[in-house]
Amino acid sequence: MWIQTLPNSIQYRVLSFLTLEHRRFCGKNLAKLARNVLNEAEGLDLWVTKAAHQLLDKVSEPNYEWVSCLNLDSEEERFENEFESLPDWLKDEASANGSLLPWLPISRDELNSHMPIDTYNEHGNSFMDVKQDEEENTNDVMREVNAVYDHINSETKEMAASFKTRVLTFESASKSVCLANEIRKLCMERGADSLTILGLIEPWKADDENASILVSNLLNGSDDELGWPSHVLCSVVLPKLLVLEEPASRVLVTSTLEYCKLHQRATVYALLFPLILRKEGINKAISDVITRIIKECLHSAHISSFCHTLLCGERKFMCLPCHLCLISHELVWTESLFNLLQNILNHNVHLTQDSVDKVVHKIRESAGRFSKSLKFGNLVLCLVNKCGPLLKPYKLLLIEAIEGTHTLVTKSILSKLDTL
Image (cartoon, rainbow, N blue to C red; front, side, top):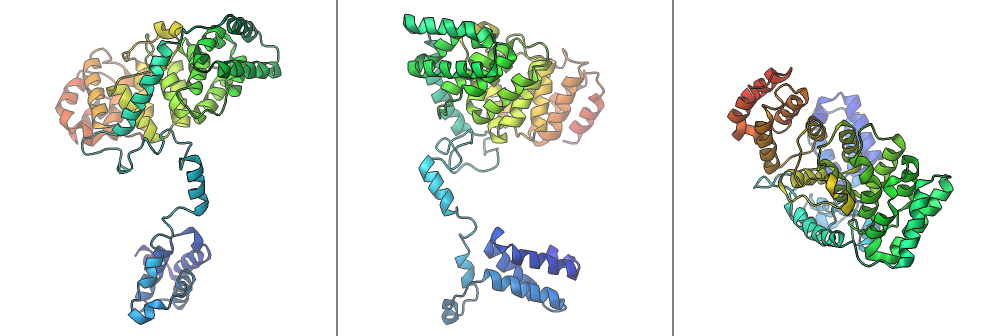
């Protein structure tokens, strides 16, 4: 036991602390620790022995049944589910909300209950059940988006035209908040036509300060991630970022991040996918925004699923019809995309074997074109460091591709590949 390697005074302090804070730990484990210490009583310091007895007394509740059966370990059975089970208040919360952790981007029903914690299954895939369920839901939403031009009555069109004029003029924060409330009310009344109405209002044409106020105040508490939250992102934020050439303003990025933290799934389909699939490829400014969204708003498991869909799956996204001309259905590989993928890997996101296969294929294709690109080289070096075991089948192929490059990290990459 590691505790026996410590000085007696430290052992005493550790055991005393565990006695004092025993409610924070598993009682079964504490009882086992105390017994193990006492079993080594020969040559044990008096104060350490006393502290171990105190700990055992604290975590052991009176139970006289063991006397009749002479089973000294019977009390451990009582602790079996003490620490691992959920507290009553959390069980009540879960039953009330229908979800144990409602803030997660993946619901309990979507997640396969017997899925291993490791991100890789026996086939090298990850989150496949979740991805299939998401695709079914997304297909329904895509059909809705493709049919956004339903009949809109003249009264609604007049109100939308009025809001459009007010969006372009920023008078004060309070008036912008009122405008956001009126827009939300109109869209909620129309229900399925909310995206059409937002298209008529054209909120993306507001300046960044006004747009940030709109985004922050267009929340409606909807649980339908692919409904209203997605409509807000793809009609206010997405059009601004698609044409971004300079670093995004701080006020716009801040409001976007706060919104994305609340709506992770909407973020993926209404912001990340269409941005990364930009027809001209992403630039540095867009890459920086995407990196911040991924790092600050998404769970690592969600990022892994997102990367798998991006690299291997059918890429579905949500946007207004007037912005489709800015988006492609294929990835355009640029230096900024290499930098983005490197940032994702450095965020300790595990890629599936299928995802790695796709990246290796693209590395082989791009090695000649980006032979002097340091960002390309840094991505390859990062991939080798993070996904080494998955690259063994491609060792010779990667060596051949990297030998044709001329960057500061070429020798480092070849050295790492030799050790696979």
